[in-house]
Length: 413
Image (cartoon, rainbow, N blue to C red):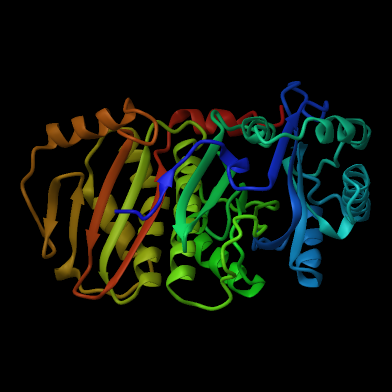
């Protein structure tokens, strides 16, 4: 069992954080579009960003900031305009945003990290952002997590939030996060933003390593449509306000902290995959028996990202041949005669040989997931074994429905 428990409070559950979300007029819809997360003290900061060669100005800004200084006090996010592929002026807008929010918070601009989401090729509506800054700062509170989570979403149907608590030494430690993402979701960071807060004391080097590994096991293991975006950012702060002894080297306490950080990231990642544009269920693929974890995750991601597998799940068609085909093209060597495939509790292939199974019951299993409770009974489980290796890996995706095409065909029109 997990050595932690879920608690309320969202992104502000860890000690020493406030958050806010307001409507500043950046989104044409008039919905909330400006979010701020603020640490009362300087916090160790780490980040993982998109691997795309076309990067938003905020991504370039944050990378430079974190290379120069591995700490921050504020994460400031606008929704509505991605400020990606906007040239020199887009980067100048980013610098102005950082300086303006820093001045309002009475901190150095070097302690501000930024994120943007929205339509690529559009600059931030700076007049609206300027007028919104005093309002979002005034709205900061220890109960502002829900408002912040609502202000970072775009095509999302639900907000995404989680907070966990464990004990290190004789004191409690909390990690929490909020995220957004629904479309353009694929490993190597998706179209997603995720912000994590923690009140542990941890060295910058360890915190960055922990975050990178957690990202690989969560946000880099989800897919909705195979597209990677320009703005993807995962930013994590650790402000030390739990007053626990500093974690400066690998050991039991560092292992526990990373495990809880990974759990937070995996919850948010699964929430993003389940909220995939037009999706009706979450798909979880677990691969065992591979040579190593990386190989297992590669097979799992290939299956979760297969348009044919995703379409079959949407059609409630237990077509295990599509699963086998996806596993075979993942680029990971394995012996075909070792392949085993299960859909839920239905064993369909064993030792590379097809088995008889109740197709009607298997189809009913897929239908049941499509009406199940959110992130509880709405998950289709695909289990694959490829041999006798120790490698285990998971990936998450969603089914591919008619609505996905409709949403994206009309995205800017």
